Length: 281
Image 1 (cartoon, rainbow, N blue to C red):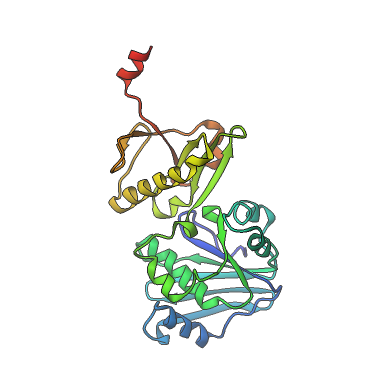
Image 2: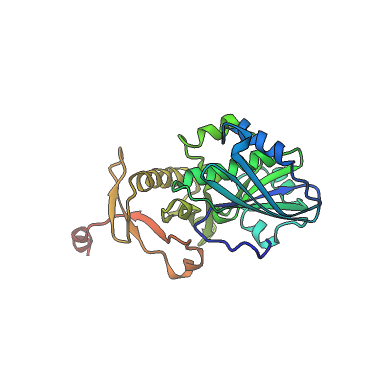
């Protein structure tokens, strides 16, 4: 990524990866029309495009619409291998889809730099720009902060974009990383919660059959913390609606500190009251 942009870890950003080595962005008028089609603006004159560098090898510019400002940086090179290893490689898509994304030859980085206070609206703005930049050569969207990636599919269609305000697209904006303790046990950890001012969560999975239940638990906890703007720390206990199980937030093991995101990470563990512990001893 060109050095002109410094990344704030809490600012949303995505990478668009393309098949050709050369960069070709739409004309300003076409970009503006696409923003209207996506529902981002009512008329093309609400879109301002500033191009500092624009050639087949490199792009540097800024696009403004409404309260949103997005910086755009492009190179006629693939993303670094280490970025692909922790995003595309661990994403939940079929091998041929991941192989296509890994074989990209150029990319555009979209970095949010606007003033809107709602992180969902910030992410949606990035995706509205991604729709405006979509063509038949777009292979995928890489979310480095969430350690995940996905193909364009219909995820950028205007109808689909309109649903993201009401139904949080976890499959796109949150990654799930496994850290194996042995062949049967692993820590399952979220990545990307920090963009929404929520700590990442971790759960110990002792049987692969428990993974879906663990992800559903993470989803419910995320919704509660995000929608109610709740701050939690290690030692706090809670119960999920409809579940008799009492849970507790705990600190992560020091060995996993390198996986902790900018907003921290809390392990979700069963809660054993002190008196029960004493009775068992």
